[in-house]
Image (cartoon, rainbow, N blue to C red; front, side, top):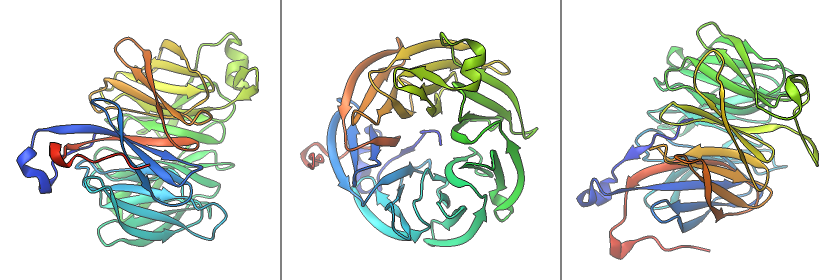
Length: 350
C-alpha cells in the first residue's frame, strides 16, 4: 500500500503542524521493529512485537499501525494493533498460520491478512474480529488496497498464477481474477487504481495489468546484459545464480516505479503502456522490499542479507546512507505524525 499517512496526535494537539516522518522497518527473522526519525535518520525505538514480524500497514490518518507476526511453525500467527505515538501494542488477534503482507483500507476499517492456510482473513479492525475468510489457494502472500477503499487485490504465490479482486464495499465479494504468466510476487497499485503492477517468478522485470480490463497488458523487462529473451524467461543472472525480483513500489508522486531485483534497483517511468526504463542503481546487497517518504524525497530499500536499510535520495538517485536494523529486514512503511515535545522525546530502546 502507498505510504501516504498523515495525522496529528490528539495527545499533543498543542504541537499541531510540527509533524515528523518516521520509517518503520520490520525484521522478518527477528522479533522486533525499528523506528527511525527521518529528519536526522536516528533510531528512536526498537519495539518488541513477537517472532518473525512480516507485514505492516496503516490507514491514512495514521492513528494505528497493523503488523502481522508470522510465528513460523506455530498453528496461528497474530495481527497486532500498535499505537505509533505511544509505541505500544494495544491489541493482539490470533489469525491463520504465518501471516504475510497485509493491507488495510485507507479508513483503517478493514484489514486483509494473507495466511498460509490458503485464505485471506478479513478483519473488522474496529470490532477487532475476523468476519470472513476468502480462499484463493496457493500461498497467500501480498495484498493491495485501492485508494478509494473499494477494492482489495489478493496475490497468492504458487499455482493460481492470478490475483483475486474483491469488492470490499459489496460485502467482500470476489468480483474477478487477473491472470499473470507465473507465480506472483510483490505488487504495486497506482493511486488512480488503474494499473496493478506485479513482479512474477522467472522475470527480471514486472507485468502491468489494467484493472478495468482485468488483464495483463504489458511485460516490462529491466535492462540487463542478458538480452530480452533471457531476462523475460529466466530472471536476473548474478554470480550467485538466477535471482528473483522481490520489491516493487510506485513513488507517492506517481512519477516512477522502483523495482528491486537481486543487487539492482531498476527505475521505470509510470507511463503506460510501455513503462520505459529510466535508470538502474547498483545496491551493495540483495534488495528485498522498499517504500518512500510521503514527499517522494527518499526511497528506502531493505537489504535483507546485510540487516540494513539503504536510503536513496530521489532527486539524484544516490545512496546516501545505511540504517542498521534487525535480522532480515523486509516490509517497511513511512508514517508522518505530530512529534513529541522536545523534553519528552522518545529515547532509543535497544
